[in-house]
Amino acid sequence: MQVPKPSESDKTLFRSVVPDSPAVTIKPMFGNLGAFVNGNMFAGLFGSAIGVRVVDDAVRRELEAIDGTAPFGPSERPMGGYLALPASWSSEPDLIATWIARALAQVELLPAKTPKPKPRTQSKP
Image 1: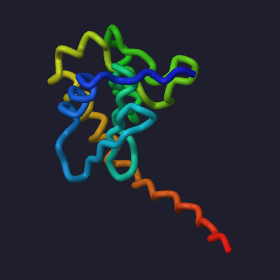
Image 2 (image 1 turned 180 degrees about the horizontal axis):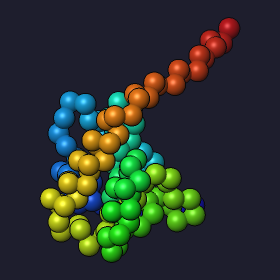
Image 3 (image 1 turned 120 degrees about the vertical axis):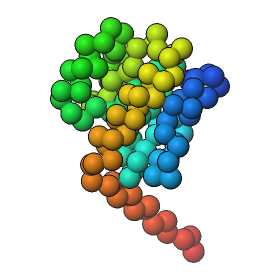
């Protein structure tokens, strides 16, 4: 599976549309970026595609009805619960920001994800 790499302008756009909040963290993921709240990802960048997590079925249907919306992630294995925003919106940062804010509002209500403990390494004698 080939993982597409975002351009610097893709990364800049993504960072500009993710809400600036102390609760939000943007982290690198497999050469791309993910936006997290309480340990749960609510938006991501996969190549040039921006995707959002959609928890509510009514909101999912609303977004799916918009022309250009697609599964998010690798075509062989799209990420369940996420949709890619239309590529034509790349020149509409306010529209992207609106959907990312909606995803954040939904994901903020989910239980916080607890970090997995790091495996203990045994020291060599």
